[in-house]
Figure (cartoon, each protein chain N blue to C red):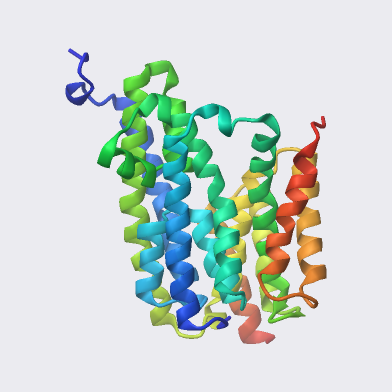
Amino acid sequence: MGQNVRVSRVNRTTAAASFSVSFTVGLYGIAFGAAGIAAGFSLLQTCLLSLLTFSGASQFAVVGVLGAGGSAISGITTASLLGIRNALYGLRMAPIMKLHGWKRVVGAQVTIDESTGVALGQSELGEPAMRQGFWLTGIGVYLFWNLFTVLGALGAQAMGDPAAWGLDAAVPAAFLGLVWPRLTNNRERTLAVAAMALSLALTPFVAAGIPIISTALLAVAFGWKVRP
Amino acid sequence: MEGATMSQMWIAVIGTSAIAFGLKYFGHSVPEKYLSHPRALRINTLIPIALLSALVAVQTVTEKSKLVIDQRLAGMAVAVIALLLKAPFPVVVIGSAAASALTFRYLG
């Protein structure tokens, strides 16, 4: 048994990791659903972003930029810069997943931080476990993320004025929660502070959305050379 | 926070989704050597840090194109404290919302 991937048993360790990641990450969907409504997106648009874009940071970014008065182009650009890493995940997963046809379409859609992370975390259990981890986590996050997006959006609609409920602060707090675990060394922390300073310094002088995109240039400058 | 028009939002929803899928599919379809240059990888890990940090700043202390100090800054202070105390994500978000809402109601 186990020769054919399709009938091999689902590894219990992999299934447990996949489920806990799916549920925990899916819960963030509440924050996204609320953020979409607070930024002025409709319920349908907010839910479509979770169904179709399905990449947390990109989704928060596009509603954040448009909510702050930015144009569609600056929203799309910011979200897409954040989505580049999914291409790199796909590149990493492709030799393991070997997907073709409609399976590649579905697999690509669920190629995100979490499905890649769980899959790579199963490497000691072998490639079948990595593939199971990828599918279980990718599809699990997809289901929970979309379910909780609807709930968050409906909740925010029922609330009325976002400021009265603190939603106007909850959205940047969610961004901070996303960026915080990525700040692991001094270069990254300096970049975070520099990006905040640059975006605020530019805000009075350029169109909304531009101050955010311009900080991608800082990332290029900081990453150009290898530094300790 | 209301800013853009509905049609801008539809363009944003469709454009973001199309490019997001294109990037994911592209990754599964190209040979690895094209995207694995060390410099490209390094910059790619830094881009989210820059963009997300900028979003935090802009959404906390600006409105339209002005710098504005209001209840959101109180919410952000609570978020930072919660993160320093290693609180889980929901506590960070809810704590920040509560601080902002209370400041808005009693001091705003």
